[in-house]
Amino acid sequence: MRIARQLPVALLGATLALTACGTDGSEPENAEETTETASAECGVPEPADRAEIGDGTFPVTVEDTVGEVTLEEAPERVVSLSPSTTESLFAIDAGDQVEAVDEYSYYPEEAPTTDLSGYTPSVEAISEYDPDLVILPESAIDSAEQLDAVDIPTLVLGDAADLEGVYAQIRLLGEVTGKTEEADSEADRVETEFNAVVEETCGALGDTELTFYHELDETLFSVTSTTFVGQVYDAFGLVNIADQADDSESGGYPQLSTEFVVEENPDLIFLSYGDESTVEGTAERPAFDTVTAVQDDAVHLLDEDTSSRWGPRVVDFAEAVGEAVQQSAGE
Image 1: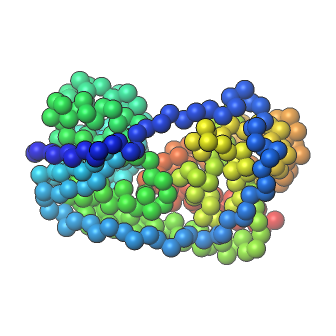
Image 2: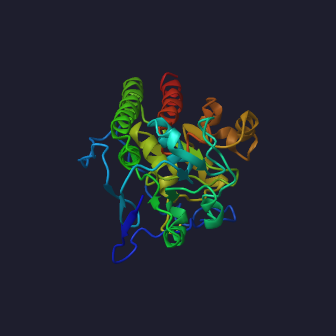
């Protein structure tokens, strides 16, 4: 199999490292200057115009983060270095074509997990699997040129920016593996089930407005509505308190302070790490016993993987959020 890549004049999608905002745990500088965040509208926005997908025949040319990629024939030995990509490949029935996956791609169970790194890929280690296609996350974009230099074909996929990005990536993976029908069907399933969860939840929510706080770790890093995770919440019409603390350096992941969260007094708190003891421990934080979410027993533990990956299991994330919202709306 031969692969041809046409590079654009400039790499517009260069990877940027996330910068911590206020890593000393202090209150965000702009917290006092912000105005109240406008309420989001409950419901899934109208889908954007979608590009036509191929018919499963080769050669096929697709667009990745770096440029155009042409595959002369269907790959038989794929190395996937992104958990979201791995989950999507298996969901579209391309699992038999996957030879190896990175250390964090442990779902589904049949995924051939290895010690390969998706953050700092080793060309030598990847080469041992004799791949005819390597799928890299955008964070490893520098490795694409190295792999191309030793004639290992690569596809670089960035994080999905929104739900439409999820469906588009699933279909793109179908094109490069020859599983276009399966991918189209899977993308439709994910979209339909996600929308059904949102519709049911919006019906239960009615005109009730709820604020929320999503916590990534014990140092109070959060997500804003500009992130993929934030946009999932946005579909439910929830008001994100982190939006008020965002700044240009956080990349959509601001670090909040205890004082800020307490003052904003969210109706719901979602923890995407830890266990039940972490949930119980929120009430023991300074002044957190005054927060509505704590008082109403509305601190929810999310699955760390489904609440951070943009593959087919985004439906599981939506179901967890929808259940929490309906519980609070019914009180």
